[in-house]
Length: 324
Image (cartoon, rainbow, N blue to C red; front, side):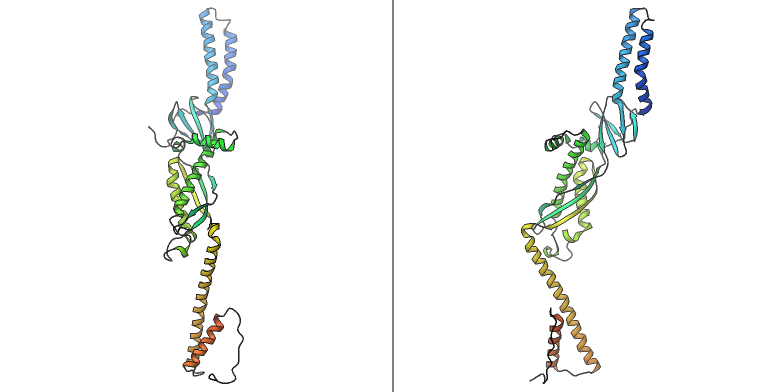
């Protein structure tokens, strides 16, 4: 028993010659019947002629069901009385055994822009996360026989309430399957990592916000593992929306602002200390002025106030000495 896709190796004739033959056959039968029915004397011969003509007419009618057209990036799953006989992917117009059930599938890439869902990250914070997914069918056997899309078709028809062709309904069922599995994979990936560095145990920890391509690759692998059962290939998967859930967004925004202010202050203080040290060293090396400890401390204090202050400072000229 076949368990994966194989190439169809059954009888496959060019479609145009068979179409011409099928059009000319009834006309030839009518001409033959009219010209020969009176020429045959025995009743047995006439009976055989009538039966032969009827059988050929039935064959001509049945032959119309053997024509199949395969467009680029399309496939036909060939089933003969419940038995899988391969997949026809050759492009063109063909004639095959009319008793084959020819299930049509499209192999074109399809896009899924998933609506953002609420999940909890590794730190337990609720976040809104969404993804965009590009997928296509690459194993027609699994897509046709390894998942039950009949119940999915009923669900799709009940949701839309519109009568659509079988292929569109089938592809819609696959889209529903992909959507459910993509949500599950997204929840699993998002729950394994914190939102950003503030929730991480260390600076080198992978996060949803800073992970970038690494998180996308992990998501793509999760999706590939989940969709392989349906013969679906994940071409690309990316997180396209990431934010804190509305109930904690304001609090987290204030925390991010505080983190940014602290980081900026650290940078300012670090630069100011370096500038003060440079000024003191230059005064000492060039012998411009001799400063005792009190004057050096006062100078350091004044320079730090000037360099670290948010507003411009107003200089005050001391007309006396430092001690009065």
